[in-house]
Length: 436
Image (cartoon, rainbow, N blue to C red):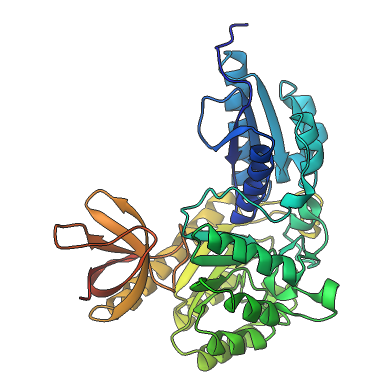
């Protein structure tokens, strides 16, 4: 086999899936760097490749498999020497993967970081717990406040891959936030499988509001955003904290999944259309102008046209600021796998597309109402002739962006805030000029 001359201590970490996976990759990279490895994120050319996989739904699993096969082919060609696979797909399907793709040098689960490091002849450094090598721009970062999930949603395989809910102690998170600020981070996105469950295992109560208040006191931290709040048993003191702490953005990501009572019962979501409506209305009453992001799952077994039409009508009525639609994936060992996957793939696709088309119109109308208003914007990058930023109502990669023309009279810096007056708007983008 032909092998190129390359440095033996270089590692390329490839991340697939969600922001929680990205945090895991950043932790791995910090450990490798402390062991004198030259570690990069998604930069080819290293002899060692570690692929952090996703195993959530069919499309994500296929992307992970395709990526593994691509690097196995690179190994065959002599472009890399070792390929290791970690993360959710490896946790869930390790025996099958070892059989089907034996050229991978090692498969590791979601809790196997020490074993992976040992295989790479690196020491697991306990003093680095909480330390990460950021892959995001220096001014923002994701912060995982817990691992795993205790919910019993019928369609979800996350507990199979991530285990039960385990909260990270508050003091450790505050220390982590302080460390991130020292690196230049101004904005953090709090993430978890279920953010509202935080603290039950450590403190005997839902304690995310107290955590947020402590993080809001971290000097130099300007924005805190909340992601993945479960609607059932939602602790309203989170909203009170949002009102009291200017650092906490008026933004909430709450995956609702459906609104038909029939679907909510089958999905084992523990709520109803009436309760969901009341929750959204109460949150909006308490925090006028809050931006709410949600996701919906279409094509679940037994979903009728009436169930779907109820969802479409409700989305049109509630007018969520941000929305994502996903098609049901029939996952082994979940409660829903016992049901007949009776909604044809083309119908699932049509329903998702219809829901997103409805949301496109809603987003366009909401954006038009922002013309003439001024927003505080943080700038993430320069793309061609434009500086690209976000308001407090937008998280990276998934939400609206603000475009400001980069001309001779415009002085903006990546990672800085600026007040921007919106001059025009499209479906998912805003355009504006700095307020001098």
